[in-house]
Length: 360
Image (cartoon, helix red, strand yellow):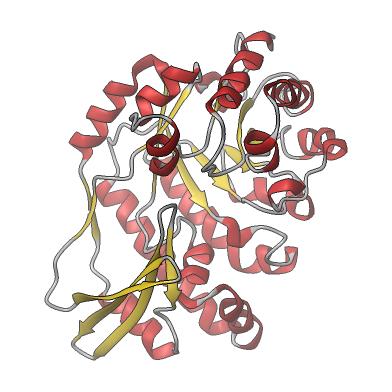
């Protein structure tokens, strides 16, 4: 996997999944850990460390939560942060597979200023990172992120905490404010990178997010509101020695010529139409030529229809097709495009079995 991330040619096709969710491991794999799950199906481990990041307590950001109970199978929680100049409120919802922000934090420009001014900084438990890196060993890589509020990239975080539609309207109606806010988010991340991350034993740092996809925003919005801020963050990560993968779980075809310009080392998720992407089988060679000639590639497997509803034979054929296109001349990690929740274990084993036959 490290060879592929360096755009080299490994002995065989690396094979993995993106963030093996607890729901699937509990429901389909008898509660296995990430390490056990990868070993059980015969894949290369791509371990994501979700723990270890804590927000420092601050008298200027006193946060409380109120349980609002269950509604339509989801648990809702009201959050309130009290600052010296006012309060910010928002609501989250959670079900057995995921959680999300159901009511945005940033409803006004005043909320945005309070957020930037008073949100406490984060700490990273680098000893825990080292322990997980040692546990991963030669079986795979350890992935981490840059501490933000909800998402890795500034634009993606803005969409999460303000609402995607509202963020787009704001960018069109008041671009100066959006640039000011994104600059503030970027400065927070760069401060965290230089203060908290040096020496952390991560093999790969994930940035970006689905809100940067060309099925969500136009290439023009991407170029103006994603590219300059992601570029600064990636430069800071490189300064302290990390490789970066840029995550766009959605459309990519219209921004193939823009993604690599942010300085990432790898691009994911190469999502096909079956999971709301726009990379068709006939587009894979184009992606390889335009993007894969500049950065490593990760992803490509439809974790929805194919991995969940297909047969092991169909899964094997798709892995080999990705190898022959995305994986031509190396620099490619075959992976599910994003999260999966109901995939049969036999199909995951089929992914691994096919990759072992894909040799360079």
